[in-house]
Figure 1 (tube, rainbow, N blue to C red):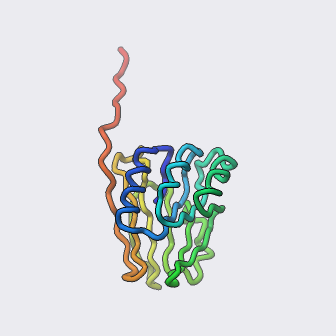
Figure 2 (tube, rainbow, N blue to C red):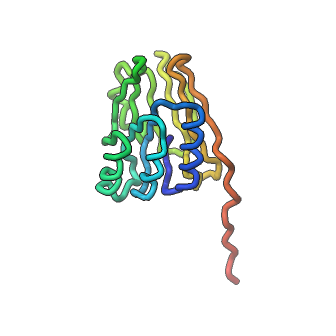
Figure 3 (spheres, rainbow, N blue to C red):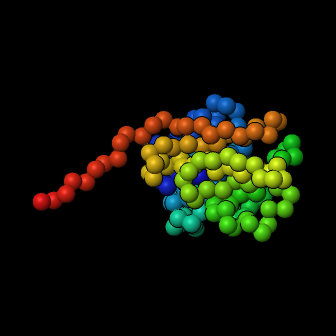
Length: 169
């Protein structure tokens, strides 16, 4: 998951989904935005591995809360699953262009647009989209199966239409 942008309600939907499907680990590719979202992550049944994004203002507060929840670092961040899948995670894809190495899966974010693609070497590139939903009103996460080595984008509940501002006349 990525780009929570302080939307605690959508984060709780994501947590419910991850717990329901039995995720053993949840990787967060940045943009908590503030420590406000960290306490909800204590409800996750799986391990949390996270990196900072470019909009994480109170990094000291986020880091303090994450000590209880899981692992947090500055990107790029590497993690190997118990069954040997090598993940490389960052917020902005440009941060890993020279260090992909032997990663099996590259998780990135920042664009708020969900995508899944393979490169010519067979590596999977996953952008889970945005949990917050503020940009496109379609919050999403990605779920990766380490046995099949496939990922899918999963929609979270739809958000109401954005508020329109009328012209003053």
